[in-house]
Length: 396
Image 1 (cartoon, rainbow, N blue to C red):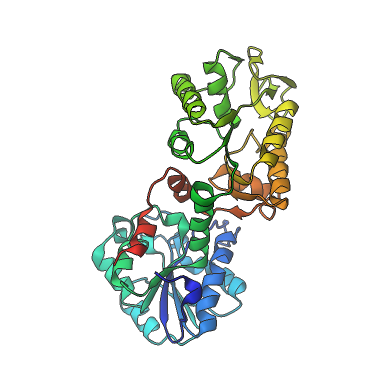
Image 2 (cartoon, rainbow, N blue to C red):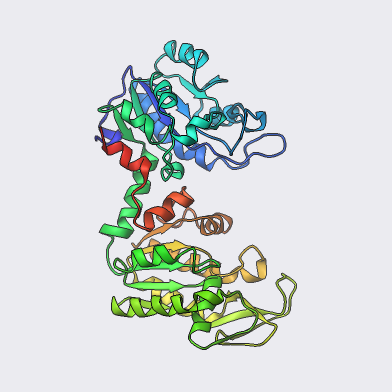
């Protein structure tokens, strides 16, 4: 399969699976256009070559043709981002889109209605995919956020374009960034895993231990490891039934010569509240009725030093309850450390839910190498799974 850069789309009708699943306010105005902007380079490449674009996406999870999930709401924002008029079809298959696609001229863009108005999208319906494919003569998948789902528009439709398909710029960049961490990254490689639960990260940890040199474990999940080693964690969050698992992970890491770095001190609070009383204590000596909600100053210094030693950095999950301002300093300090390392030539990839929200909130999104747009898809990639949307592009 050729890269998008090498293909000339002159006079081609190109069906592009984008991810326009964007947040809307009460007036149905787009509140965050990140995903629309992310699709722009692929769309503009087709238009500049002299082709036309037929864009398809989902929005939300409608169980019927619910008007609040109509992609009509995002047309004006898409026009703002692209700087051109966008045609809209109030159906994604059938007579209306077929006629609009037929008359589409080079340089024009057509947006189809929400794919998930049809249950065949999520069940991977063959006929539905065939109808979508009939609108165009080339297919581009540029929706990493849904690449882990075997849906009609992300996986099934690709078979109708045996020699006329490619990844868009965004999807290609996502694959390349994950490969840099999992396969081709310069050593030392560091993975930083935060968040509340060990159980949600266990598959990732098992998958990446062979590929990394350092592992920082932070956030709520660190308390399960500390308690498993005999530490006193007060009322801090802990998965009691995962303590043996935590010890197994530490043992496995030691066998593979991966250095594991756990917090050494915390900012503890006497209540889960931004107005709680706080004090810095060692992580294994947290008093009863107190809970660790952020990492402490010694931990920040240790983690900063580890980050600066590493050439390839993966960050997934915050180090504290960053949504509350008093407990955001550990996550901010980590962001600063990663930004510094990136500035000095390291490759840094941020991905997965809360860490993406944190880097955006604190302005680190422009200071790291790459911020992944696909939460679930990114995590499944790190777990070593082959994503259906990616696999479909390499088969005829």
